[in-house]
Image (cartoon, rainbow, N blue to C red; front, side):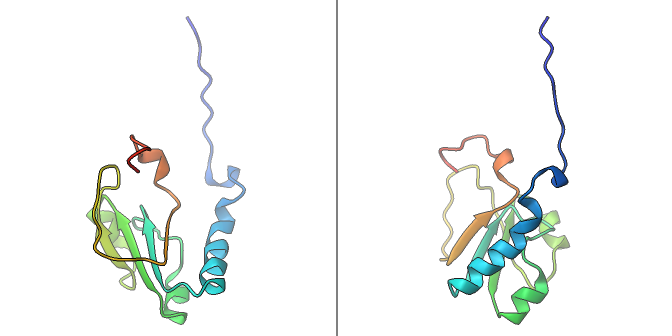
Length: 111
C-alpha cells in the first residue's frame, strides 16, 4: 500500500496573498483602468469599497453562488456566472482577474 502525504496550507503560507490588493490597485492607477471584473470574488472581493469609491471605479464581482454575492458590499456590480463552461458576457472590461477560482475549474482549456 502506498501512503500519500497531504500537506494543508493556509493563506499565510502564500507570500503574495497579502500583496494582491496593493498590486491590483497600483495596476489600476498606473494604467488608468476604470472597468474591472473579478472572477470568483464571492463575498470577499480583492479591492476594498473605499478605493472603488475614491476612484469612481466600475467594479464587477462574479461568483457561481448568488448567496455569496449578496454578502458583498452594495458598491460592487454583481454577476452570477459559472466560468467552468462556455460563457457570453455582453460587457467589456479594462481588467479581468481572479484571485480565488482556479482551483475550482475542472477544464482549464475552456477557462
